[in-house]
Length: 168
Image (cartoon, rainbow, N blue to C red; front, top):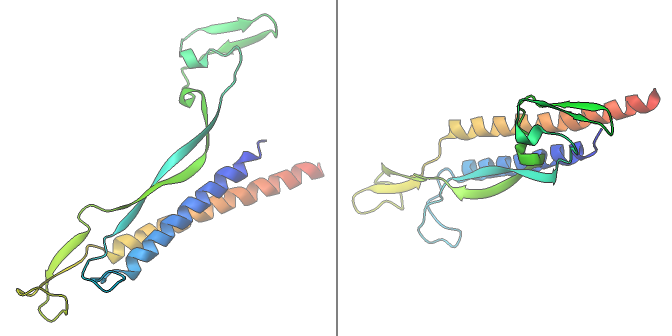
């Protein structure tokens, strides 16, 4: 059993925490029409993109899986028969978790509404507001929370399995 499962689960938990922080920031700024310095400027919705972390190359020795040929290969030194089942191994790379690729401003991050009573409304009564849907943000928060919990459960289950194996 590889101990890098904790790194993978931990990286997933970190990525989902950043996603939850970004969603919380969006919700907190749902009506923000000013910059932190007080100047006019609308908060633009942020979103997070993730990227897979690839680690070590797979060292399969005499394996012919990389070639994706339909035949089998016999290794006379070990007596093993290596059969290719047309399985792709991510170009020989192992997944090592996930990381936050970037936090970016969403397209169409600003909406214009008619509200002549708003202090930041223009002379025609229109004001620019963040284009943030509370329902979409809550769905994103629940999704990130569940993914975080799933990664925590993986780490806990692996710990339990390791403890059980030591007791055998």
